[in-house]
Length: 193
View 1 (cartoon, helix red, strand yellow):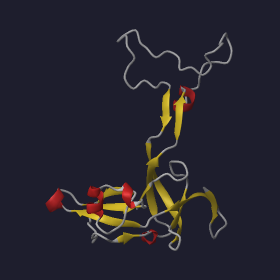
View 2 (cartoon, rainbow, N blue to C red):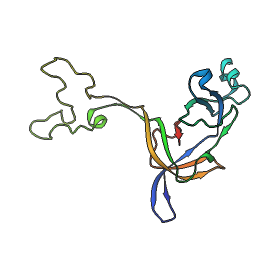
View 3 (tube, rainbow, N blue to C red):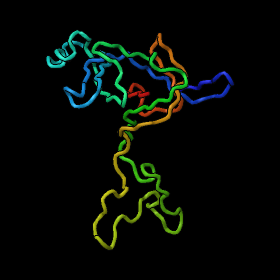
View 4 (cartoon, rainbow, N blue to C red):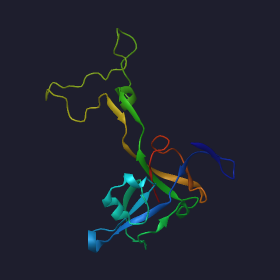
């Protein structure tokens, strides 16, 4: 993350993202597949790490490390296999949606995982300051599904909406968006307009 100052001198917390270029590898239509979508490829791998089925599917477009399918909304744009989508599709002031896998935090207690208050710090509390307290009931004499308890935290798919594009660098494929995005440095994310 970085600090970004606009022309009025207002400071924004922002995240610098490397975006694209992505190549359209397959276009799905309502007639052949039942829905409208485009599959795009991003990144590169060594050729010996790609199986024959992927080589045949990618043809001569490249050796992509990641592929992702995006459904079209109401209007279907004119896209064909081999088209390159770059960061220049975005403009300053656009509002985007960013999705990614959040940082994994391991096994955590209820205070950190769910924001529980914990027990009182006095009156004989010896080892139960950060415990969750009672989890059962007289009836139905079992732990009810969905009970918030300690467990693995993080590593979930998180979507952050309404992030404003503050800057676009077409030469270096960089995009500057306001606020934070999920994941650690180097995490693969989706940016949707």
